[in-house]
Length: 159
Image (cartoon, rainbow, N blue to C red):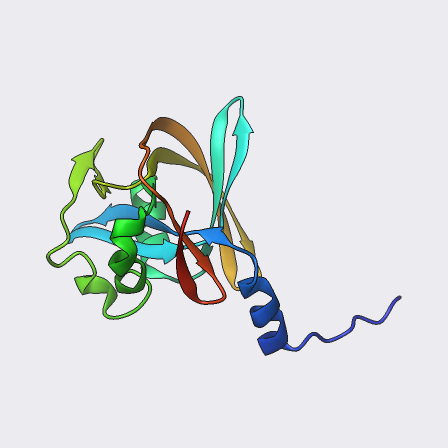
């Protein structure tokens, strides 16, 4: 058996922060209203059938309600929505939607003005380390032309 080298978590975090990522807010609903969180680990999985993979923290509130409802939206934030990045990444999760305009599509909260929104139904979930990889079957999608919000090295960039 080969020995596994221990990687310094801070060094790994700094290295991964150099990779530009689109900023998304994953939204779903709870019995008390809309819930969501900022996520930068979203990837297109397949065109046939259309599907995506989202990495969510295992044990997180958004994942809990996503599993319960079986539906979610991936909202790719526009440059003008950069304040939503931090709002949905920190603070009281129960208050993240306070004062945030949203509409319901198929019962799922959607953030108007997003560069792209992909509505999904939960197809599968796989726990890996401290995160759960959620596979969503795409049931609808929209897109716009406005500049997207990208995160690199902890800084917001316009793309």
